[in-house]
Image (cartoon, rainbow, N blue to C red; front, side):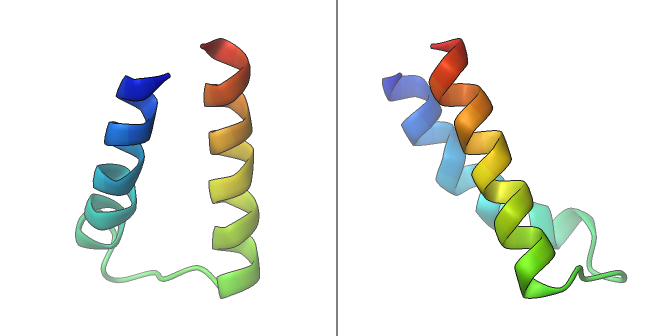
Length: 44
């Protein structure tokens, strides 16, 4: 659980760096972030 909390901000920071060309709409990226966080919370 703690490891996921530490990796999550790094993922948010590195995601725009990895895909600077096609930036998804805020709503889509927010939904994607929420679903990833949900999966991590269920997996830990």
